Length: 331
Image (tube, rainbow, N blue to C red; front, side, top):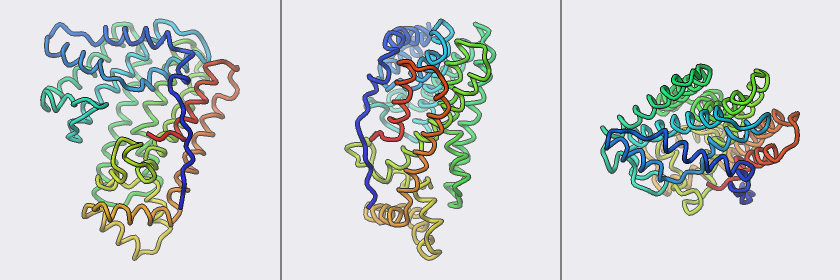
C-alpha cells in the first residue's frame, strides 16, 4: 500500500521574510476593495474578513525579494492577483453551488447567485481599473492571459468529464491552465515589479508554472490518500464530480480493458462510498498513487532548478520551503 510521508510546513515560517509587507498588503487590499455602493462595500468587507493562506501575495513578494526590493508596484501586483483570484473564487462557488468558503458561508449562500456573479464581475473590473489607472499595461497583459488560460482549463475539464476519455497529456494541459498559469503569473509579476530584466521575468514565470503543476498534482493525490479530517473535504470528491486526475489516468492506462470499463462505469454512474474505496484500491494497486507522487516531485525539482542560480537570501530559503510545502502538504 502506498504511504505518503508528510511533514508539517509552517506558512508563517515561509512568509517570515515578508511579514511586514503582508501586513501592509492587507490594508492596501482592503482599501482597493472599497466601494461607495452599500451592498458592494458590505460584501467586499465580508470577503476581506475571510482568512486565506495568502499564497499568491506571498509568491509576489517573495519573487520580488529574490531579485530586488519591494516597492509600490509590488503591492499593486499583489493586489491585482488577489482581486483576480477572489473573483474566480466567487464565480466558482456559484458554478459548484458551494455553501461555504474558508469555513464561512459563501457569498452565493448569503446573497444568492445574482449578487455573487455581479460581485465577481465587480472584482474583475476593479482589477482592470487598478492596472489601467497606473498604466500597468504589462501587468494587465499577463493577468489577462492567465484568466484566459484558467477559463480554458476549466472548460476543457468540464468537456472531458462528460466524455471520460482524458489522457495524461490533456490532464497536464488542464492543470497548466487551471492552476499553474496563475501561480506563474504571481511570480512573474513580482519580478516585473522590481526589474526590467526580461530573463528574470521568464525565470520566475517558469518557477511558478512548475510549482503550480507540483501543487495541483499533490492536491489531486490528496483526494486519494487524504482523510477528511486532514484535507477538509471527503476523500474521493474528485470521483464524485467525475474528474479524471493523474492517479486514475495512469491506473487506467496500466490496467486491462475489462477493469477499465468497470472503473469508468462506476465513476460515470456516481460512485458510492464503498465503490470509492474500491477505486482507490484499484488506483493504488496499479501504481497510480506512486506515479502521481513521482510526477509532483519532478515538477518541484524543476521549480527549484529555476531559482538555483539566484543569490542566496532569506527569500530564496523561504521560496524553496514553499516548494517543499507544495508537495508534502496535507491540506
